[in-house]
Length: 196
Image 1: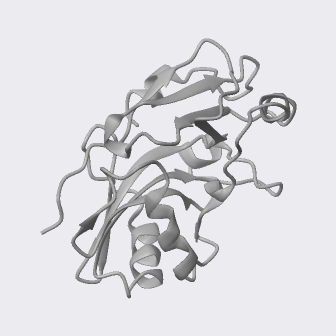
Image 2 (image 1 turned 45 degrees about the vertical axis):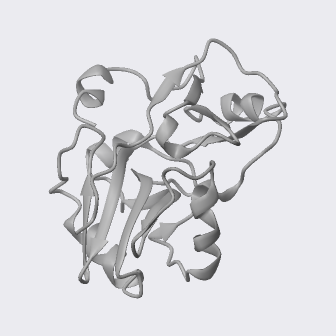
């Protein structure tokens, strides 16, 4: 029996900042999902606790790709990517592209929990997994400074940056996000965000 884990929440930061005890990565724009894998099957649960029904094919691919993982819980984001690898929210929302899973971390693997370990502890498991294109650790790039990253995010029309304290466990829910104020895919998002 897999435990029920609450996904780490994101608080909104007023501005970017550099600090040696923090790590920085891109924010991927899609549907947040905890992916549960057990007995050859996978299912995805939203941050509000609802099981996604529209991503059955993606769940099948995840289960097939990670069939060596008997009991696993992954944290990630369901996204659609354009030709440049940028998440396109409306392609995902209106099913105009093939969804894939951007992995953040492994929270549980074969009776071992990583949710109470320090940030990114579970990611070491990724190195031992052979991941297909549909299930890739897009967020494997972890930076120790946000200098330049935020400017690049704005230039490339990406959603924003995630900032995480390195020593804080996943379960502390202490992540921060800073948004790109000119992000082109924010229009009419309230109704969609309430479903995510």
